[in-house]
Image (cartoon, rainbow over all chains, first blue to last red):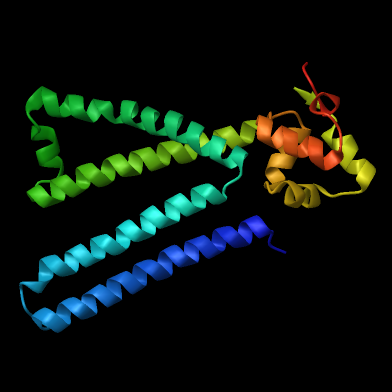
Length: 147
Length: 63
């Protein structure tokens, strides 16, 4: 049987996800009603609506789920982010060195047909992925030492 | 830090999950505190002390 704490956590996640869907569908319906179905002017507004729903899901989900965690879990998150995320940044720093050494030629060859948008996304997601991976590893180690 | 949490819980016949529910923490936290792997914050230590009706120093001892 689920504990009160687990139920509250599931409720928070559900509110975050449902809220995001409602924001996205609601905003998209309003935007399409104003601009019409295939109007190019609607595109940036639709992107903004998507972004707003993501911000809601991430912001609400993160803040509420943080409050639902008990002190030990909060301690684990803090330690994991500090150790894992900073560790990931340091470990991925050699990529910057590659870029500095030859003006990015190596990276350009690696993704030969990349667009500026793709490079930007790759950089952002790469950093996020490295930090998440680092913090997950640090979290697993932290919990293993507390058993 | 050493503590008598396991013994106090056993005296009352509570499971770890039951104690966790009463303290509003996860069962993992109770396990770690009982094993001396995690030292609770002062507010949680006071909560534990109130729950068992004993002063903090009667439950937690410095090693």
